Length: 138
Image (cartoon, rainbow, N blue to C red; front, side, top):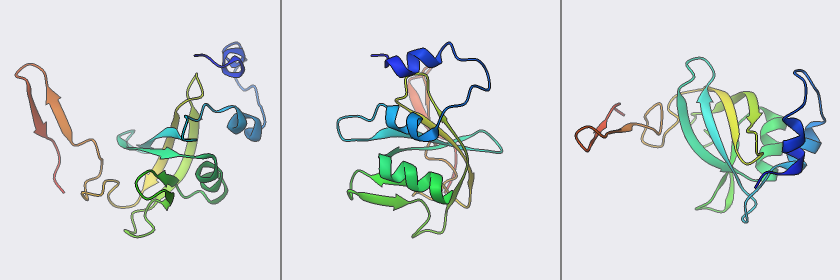
């Protein structure tokens, strides 16, 4: 369902500015208070991973410049790289047209995936022969 706030932004002119706090308050967090976040390499545009943020992790990311997610399995804030050293530095953050997904362009240090691959998206489907192939090594 389209939220009126974002519906109104569809008609906004290029370079229209609004307070970041207003934008955050209008995001469509799900029932668990989370919004999906795509991390994309700022240089290559490769999609690195999909994770989740709550309002606190989003605000911490914006305040520190370090990508901070919400761990759904551990139920705690997760600063990407805090244990592995594979930090993500925020370069830009975009909100989709419905306010229910975020795109963060990042500078990735080391691997983004816990498998030690650059990207979590290393399994590629091949519909022609109904198979899947691993496209990168750890």
